[in-house]
Length: 347
Image (cartoon, rainbow, N blue to C red; front, top):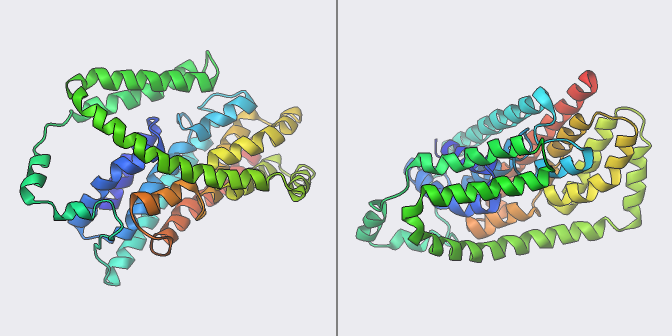
């Protein structure tokens, strides 16, 4: 139940436009409390965070995440492009991944694993705080849950309405601004607490930015080697479904860069004009591109994976990465294959 609650919270937040790095740092203390209460192994917290933040929430129709916004620029689509097939694939990833996490955790419990907070975890020192201080923290007045959910709903609704009247990149910026303003207005009496949160957020962002820039920079350099052009030309000349070659190209580039958004930014300018000239359905290409960005991007060198495992949770790749590979790489890749087959049949 702890893992389910953890990644449910993150699905709500990321689908509402909150940056996945912000979500990771915010949800981790909650996850530690839930996992400790349920006596679940701490090494599964990273998979709950990563899966909840980068699964269907960044690749499904209507999402304000950048992986769903980038394709609109190259295919002339809106964030809801992809139709029913896109919704079905999002649900498939959510359900299959959730069940797989549950299976892996139950197997770990049968093998005798229990909650074990690593010494490198940011929460380790807090475990020794006096009970009185912890009790006082629990009794502090917090905003009503509805005031936290309304801004997220506002972002999704406003984005998908405005995207029909302005470029999606502009629409998402306006929608996020409206969400920020709504958050301040609905929680105005808690404004004195914001400055501490802003300071902590600025500090945490430096770690996230450094990790992401490092892996995307590596991928960008790799894309300049002669073999990259050979690979691109081979895909464009491949006979058969253009959806399959598009999926393969975006998947491989995202795997090289270790970044869904970085891979899309490199791949789509190169391949989208060619397929648009061929008359391939833009909505189908949009959704396949978004889905393809969420597979091999979650390899061990992914910026968010590194940040979550190391900086946020204080874990190691050896202990925590295997579950992430299964639910964040294998499951989305299976979903991508199903989507390519369905779009090929119906489009």
